[in-house]
Length: 72
Image (cartoon, rainbow, N blue to C red; front, top):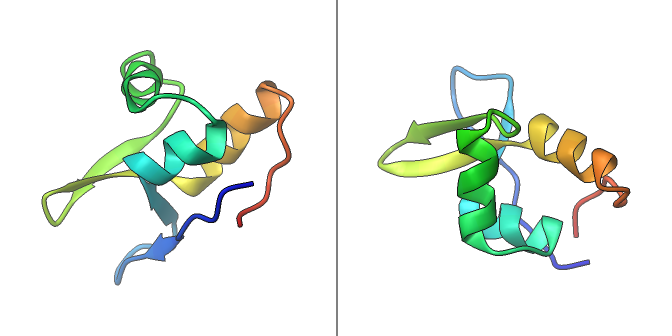
């Protein structure tokens, strides 16, 4: 599995990954990640001018797709 970096921001207990890392994790295109966000399948927020995917929502999508749920 491709290595991804998980971020945690001050004031948030949630963990996040970048759009690029989410695509690597799910083995798909970034456009697919954006579609998942649009369909409400992935939770995304804009932090410091960067869109970030909530790690727990990415793991849930991976589980639905039958993928292992672990980082790097």
